[in-house]
Image (cartoon, rainbow, N blue to C red; front, side, top):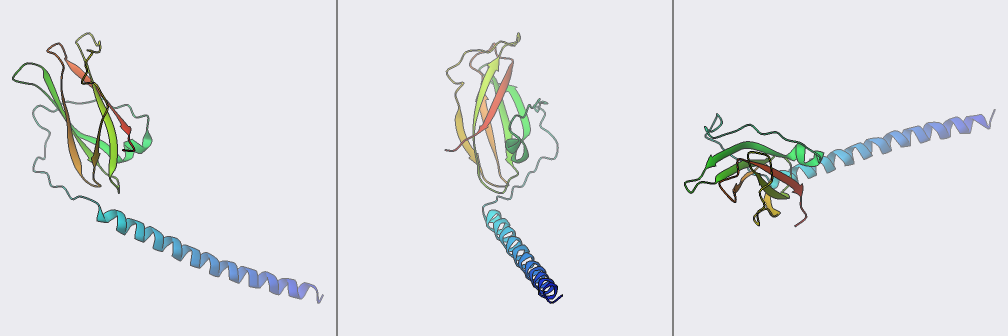
Length: 160
């Protein structure tokens, strides 16, 4: 029986130590999360919009997401497409960053004709841009010819 008594005391001490360790660990994690949010908030941008409804030239767009990370932080706020004075189509897309850090991404426009065929263009190259936390940017492109009737925009994460 004397052997069991120390085991019970040891178990009790271990449980007490473990609870204290868990409390310290929870406090450390909470402090780290608070500091991370505070630091991330320092780089954010507050944006004010005067428009409350979509523009007359705004169109609906279909989105297919293969990268969930992009889906949660980068969103296309509005897509506008107009014919330029010279004739070809122009598209402007408002991209918003809802994340907690600068997002650097690459984008590319491919233009298609009424039959859905891609129109070859030297302008269809990957371009890099970034958006600050809470900010937005406009990416735009002009079709390579008057034959273009629609476009396809591709986005991907970028390191540079």
